[in-house]
Image (cartoon, rainbow, N blue to C red; front, side, top):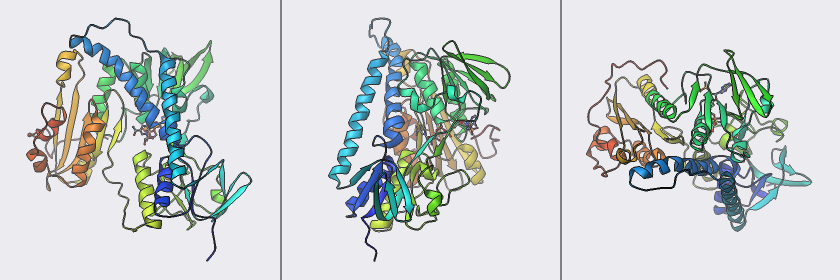
Length: 462
Ligand code: NDP
């Protein structure tokens, strides 16, 4: 048998790569991990974590307003000290980088710094160094992709949104997906005038149509302007501003332009094609059900395989693969009913099928929907409302979709996602005792179906 330097070499120190390395080491494997930048990948450095911190910062804008409804006499004119927020965020991210470094070091993982390139099916080159591995795992993630519009060099991607010199007075956001909606919401609450330009008819395609419409209404009430069915023809620079011309000729002046039109897998410069690793037509690494590429010793997980671009999915893929390579081999990856949240204001969270997808899959579907003003807002004075929706397969009584727009929706839906995976029926939801007074109890008290099997789903349905 050929002797390799290590049992597994992981390329990429993001969520998937670090999880894989730590698990492999825990199984007793000899592990090396290569990273060229800060440890933690997109999630820690320029994604989930800093975004959520800024989302918390944004939520104070509402909290100050709301507090007066509860009798708090606050001084007027609260203002955000943007440099302080940026500084504190950067310090927390640096702390997390160190935590990752420490976990790897204490886990007995050899960390190599630099850019990795595959030289052959078992050999990776990092600068002058060469290391051989029985297995190579590519977990290099993805990066923002910009459409080919004139002036694209004048727009920013989400990477730059955390360190802007100041909160822009006028922000134009291109795109209608996760990142566009989250940053539009966050920067609106931080004080920017925000216009969101989207090529589609509504936000967040693929989500349930009620969720989409409800969120749009809430964002609209917050003062975010929308241009739907709109594309950007050109971006120009003028006197320190950006002039964005839309396809219908409208010219919008902005101080910053964020383009959030999707992310593409990081596959360039890794030597993948040279060693025979096949890519999909979209440029992702093609893998089988066990994350094996067309080269049997090379595997890939996370955004670089572009199945579902979510940190917890990459973590699970890494877990399943490490169990396969070094453990029991009994774990399976299941992409069904992945819960997800969008950290807009208010949050969206969802698990399972939209109404439209359920109607396409099942013969008879019942919908339970409730919109209400949460108890807090009876005194806060804010008009914001909450939406909750259950989608039920009428023939089996199974709950196949749970959707929420409202405060802490992600926190609420995580538990319901467990119930759904366990195959909970609507009757079981109904027999569960609510926690009172909460918003979440609405999910176990919705008794009357609002739409029955013969209902026509609107054309914009997700
Ligand atoms: P999304 O896929 O969510 O959204 C991309 C948006 O850009 C869509 O509205 C899409 O329109 C539009 N679009 C795509 N191509 C073009 C184009 N050429 N011109 C104009 N518009 C275009 O991608 P994001 O960049 O927002 O986020 C990437 C991924 O990161 C997400 O899919 C998600 O998986 C993950 N993410 C998760 C978060 C979370 O868990 N909270 C937060 C942020 C990101 P259309 O709908 O018509 O295709």
